[in-house]
Image 1 (cartoon, helix red, strand yellow):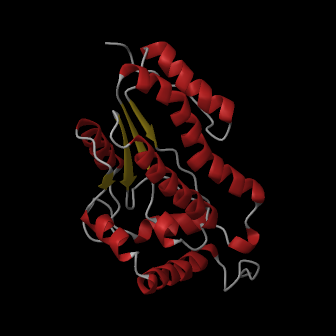
Image 2 (cartoon, one colour; image 1 turned 30 degrees about the horizontal axis):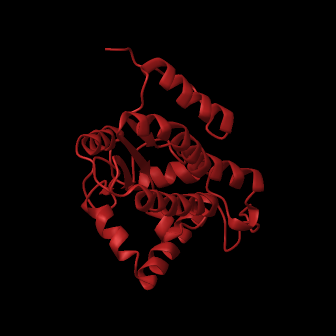
Length: 229
């Protein structure tokens, strides 16, 4: 059995994303499963959102996944099977205040994932949309705001707002590899949340509450230019 291969990569750089896949193919000779899991977020108001940050968010969440998938698909097709798992987010359905760039990129990823599913339906290429809930990681931490947000929620995977452990999510992804499916949720609460987000009224209710909490943590009033002294 070949050793584990680690390829440090800045996925915002297309050439590095391509090289990551090429290096993997060179080392193992094949790619059976590709999990597009990179994530990046920095809470900020839409009026203060920098185009550079927006571009980086889209490059990491969407473009990098497209590049890696495009590079891996020929190998999967040659060997007669392959599994692509895209880690999406309910935020792409909700529209999370103060995370407009992240929300937009995840919404695009959901659409792209479903387009891939339709394109490769009936073939040996399986495409999974994985919808995680809150995960207890450093993801999205930005000063006191993210710290407070992280401390406000329970961990351990119990309760509707509990954050799941990274180990729990990793175990689910391994299970998804063993038993491929088109759609997978991290838990029942996430499944129900995604279902309820079809309601505009519920979406607005949740979004407004998140928005108030985010502004409070970031020290903002209605608009991000009105900062508390």
